[in-house]
Amino acid sequence: MFNTNTLIEAFGYLGSLLVLLSMLMTSVVKLRIINTIGSVIFTIYAFIIKSYPTAFMNLCLVLINLHFLWKMSRTDKEYEIVKTGGDDVLLNYLLDHYRDDIAKCFPGIFYDPKKADQIYVVLCQGKPVGMTLGNRNEDTIELTLDYSIPEFRDFSIGSCLFETLKNEGIKKVVYSGPDENHLNYLKRLGFQYTDGIYVKQL
Image 1 (cartoon, rainbow, N blue to C red):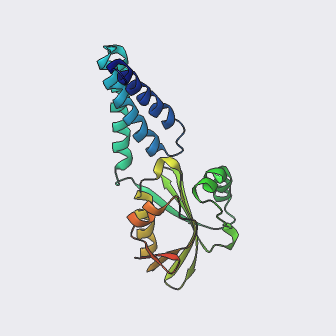
Image 2 (image 1 turned 135 degrees about the horizontal axis):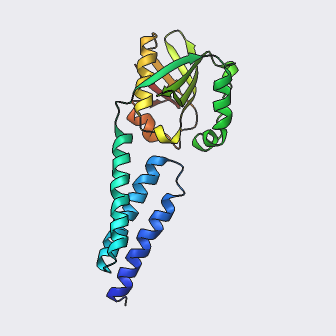
Image 3 (image 1 turned 90 degrees about the vertical axis):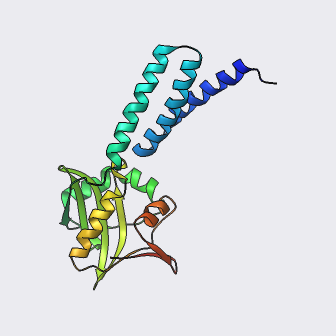
């Protein structure tokens, strides 16, 4: 049988473990969510054992995480969508710079900017935060890559990009690449899975 002290100590270890696990997250949103949960648990634990400096520090971490999660959840970020070409120096630098993260996000993906005729770089306050590659066929665009850097994976880039595509006469967006890490994203933005491909009507 576990006594009360053992359970309390296990509770503290759980909080510490979650804080440590959060540091392994590649997504900043997941990092802050898991870190917040761990910090809440550790704050409660610190109050139980009357370690008030520890409780104060973790409570501050909770408030800091909540502040940044609130900022990241806002969808009123101002983006600039810059259309470019496959030979663009900045585009190819970004693709190379984020190559490993792209491979993690889209296991097995193949994309070649020189074979894409619709290429967009998304900027936020002048900072490149996303890249989209695709090919257009009349009023349909088939995406080969739709990538956002970790700090901006909150659906707002997609909403802004699709509005831009709609203004360019695109009526349908098609995606058939790796989806295991992006099911929530695709569903949240209104894609429908049909005959092995994801389709979004604009």
